[in-house]
Length: 275
Image (cartoon, rainbow, N blue to C red):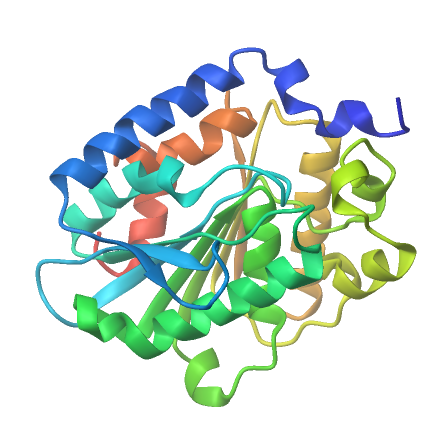
């Protein structure tokens, strides 16, 4: 057992987490069968570089982009199709991003793939009724890490100005302790990787309106990293909101986006401009 295993071993902490993942898969299967969609669209050449798109009914719609978590080494976009239902119903085009997984690729490769995916969406989403100048990006767990890396990237002004909001759910922004946990058996993070890739350790400048949310029953590390990232946003005078989601754990936080019967989803829809 390595030093910080308990902070990241969520299945041990939440034994029913697998049940939530199975419900995700079932509801996502139904969503793909019942919603209009274009599935497994390539944004690059590698097997994992795919995106599922659920178009809005009308053109010039806000675009909601979701990036899944899984500690860079597991899960798949097809487990999160269920998120598309309330957002397309509200008038958004939705893109759910996939990427290759460790240990077949490095964390740096995964970051680069998600930057590539975002640029591809910006350039092509109008084909699915999306407005390329009205993008909101959301990630859960290391998906939130990847959102932070997209925002940190040196985009040309026309791309940066298209990002109207960011939603970071149950995120990790510092790889230091992850490197000192069982996860590094597959991630192979070096000290240089921690220093060069951790969003909490990188300079940031202009961010859009941002929600940083974390579940009340997450581990101390998840809650602490969310608070630390908010302090970083505060230091650059960015518009952000920190939300501690009552009675939620790591598995139930992302499930909130599957319906409109909660304050979090409605705040996200507000940022999208469709609530």
